[in-house]
Length: 353
Ligand SMILES: [Zn+2]
Image 1 (cartoon, rainbow, N blue to C red):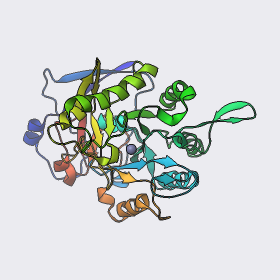
Image 2 (image 1 turned 60 degrees about the vertical axis):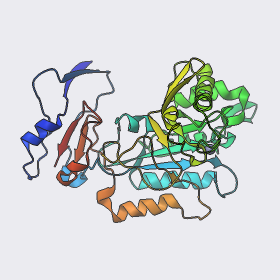
Image 3 (image 1 turned 60 degrees about the horizontal axis):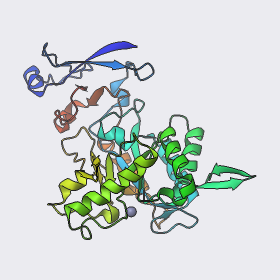
Image 4 (image 1 turned 135 degrees about the horizontal axis):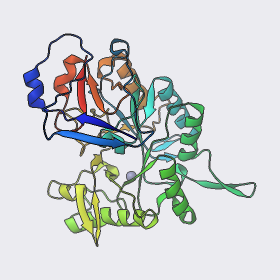
């Protein structure tokens, strides 16, 4: 265990310090020398040394955009809302081969993106908690994770592709994954595997249309949290995927973010839309955690949206999030500095090159 001092970034002081306009790999630590020092104790193993990375070769850009992928069912036939196991494997392999690494939405929302320098984070989400996402099957008298279910495939692809990761968030309704005798085991295993559970409401109503009171909004969100916490008492669900993409009307929206139902409180740091393009970096001024766009994973066309956006980033590399390898720093090219929201993640150091 060792202590590290992180210095809070202060916009005013940066402005006073000014930008030289020269290439500089010096961290833009701004030390006001007083109460803003923020000692953080790190557990052994959590620590990522700030290796001397070659900024010009790697060109980290943590103001760049991130894809949040949205899948629904994993099933035998490719059609709207269904991706086949083999197409899902292919998606993951192509992402890996093109320098993408899986990160949890929880970590994106908290600005703790731990991806090796030079790689791009990508978030995977699943809606509806269907059985094909996480299924147990009996083989030779033993219950095993169906290797063709999403969880089985994510584990397999991480085994085959070192450093890929297993992060994915499953937005579930009541009776997640539809094998009630396995719910306890599945939810515990998801967390063990580095995956997450998110709120998709209790019974999947359209929140734009079918929920008409703050009581019903809080019931829909609180009941689901209560059900998950009956299996995982300490687990925090901190994001919501809107069923059908239905955005609650203005007067009810605050209750989609935060509320309480019969003693069960909830707080959604992130709210996910349905469709259609990459998300801004969480460090960007343009990032709105309550309106996170997603890209559809399944596609009736063989060659779908994910591939379109991967090509888009090939053509526009300056728009792609490239990690600096150290979650304590936010690194951007000098000309991207004005995109960074300096208020959002206190405790991180912003640096440019
Ligand atoms: Zn849904």
